[in-house]
Structure formats: structure tokens, C-alpha cells
Image (tube, rainbow, N blue to C red; front, side, top):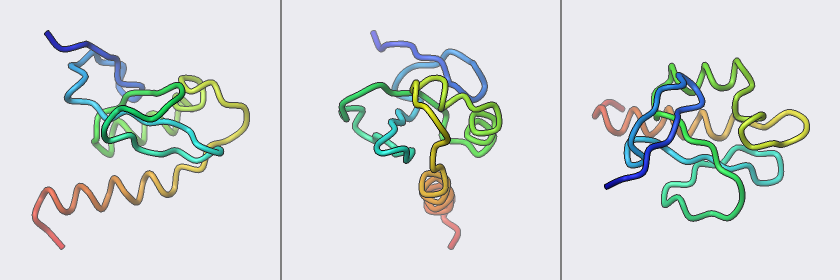
Length: 90
């Protein structure tokens, strides 16, 4: 039986395998593909809607318990690039 986590973007409970774990390293949001990086993690669906909602509501800052703003640009670029690859577009 797989673990259940809550997406910080849409607040829907889902299987851990369907969500992406995200950690903060030096105030930068970093995807944790293998879910093995040390430290506190937040879980989010890999959809632009959930990621945008989490950033807009400052959910990553609260879930990761960091003080100050997080740099999310690298994470957003990676997510957009990944989405294009999956859909087959260039």
C-alpha cells in the first residue's frame, strides 16, 4: 500500500507516486524526483495549475517552513520544460 500525501497547490490527497516532492535548498525551490533529498519536503501535482496555486498562496513557504521568499523560477522552468517533453511538443 502506497502512502498518501496532500498537494500543497490544490489541497487534494493523492498517492505519493502521483505527486512531486519539492525541497528548499538555499532559498531555492528544488524538485526531488527520487524523494530522497534531506530536509523538509512539500508535495505537489506536476501541473501548472497546482504549482501556480501553491506559489500564489505561499504554500511552499509555509509547508517548507522557510523564512523569506523562495526562488521559484528554476522550478517553474523545469516544470514547463518537463511538460513539453511529456506532451511531445518542442
